Length: 381
Image (cartoon, rainbow, N blue to C red):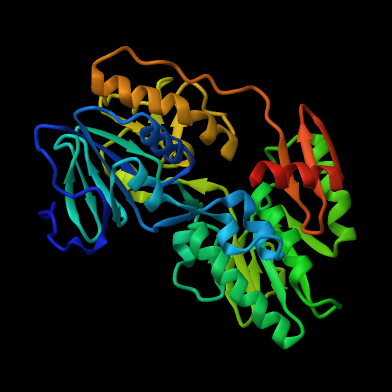
């Protein structure tokens, strides 16, 4: 790995150096779980420990509010969390940089610009990327839903162009909760009329394959009413001349494509030598500690619990991991026994339909209405 860079312009908050005798906690990524850790560090600092946060953007966008941002309910500032300010309050150094490698044997990470950063304890909350997005990377008309900070802005630009042109067609590749919610938001913002439209393409036989039968039934009844087409049981094979090509031979007109497939791990996690599953997510134990590593933790979308492989990849779980991760980072640094994280069995799912209404799903029940949107809005804010 290269040596550490000396340019200090990407550093905010605490000094980059510090007393070498103090143990070094490195937080890689500014996800939901690390936000809780930083908040706790601001309230209850750790003695004899210096903390560094490495995250590409000083602000992170709360993904649950992106559909609301697309339809104009929220401003960009409403959806953003200033992690650089939170790091400063926690007494942590903040590097505006991207982690590209981890070397658990050398106890270092590598940041794209800054280079090598040593750690005593490392925590990963770097998120994920849409499955298969690498194959379409660099295509101007194809927008991956992650990183959310980039996706929201690019989708907004296409919507503005669509309104100026008076018509536009969009295709959402991926019919999970995120893809369905984006499709509703797009349909609300595209110009009215038959010349505009939204189509969801999903490889599985049904949309929302991880949802309950009742949820799938409710959403399936809503989509035609909102003017959203659906193509299931087929896969995206390419984009050419303003059309999405499908493996069943059909073509769907599209001025732009939103790539919202299921998640996969970031490549550097699998390349690091950490234990990962088939999708490239870091395998963690019940303490959120990486398997076979005593000083590396992972949480949120970049991790998979070894004993709970079917745990949904939903934000509520990342949020609830926050107190456990905070406790176990502290306990590791203090040489104390760790506590267990027990994922909840049921959780409330709320999907915005972009018109002041939302679909709820809980314990097999589902419905649609304004009261569910008001609840979602309150929770997200």
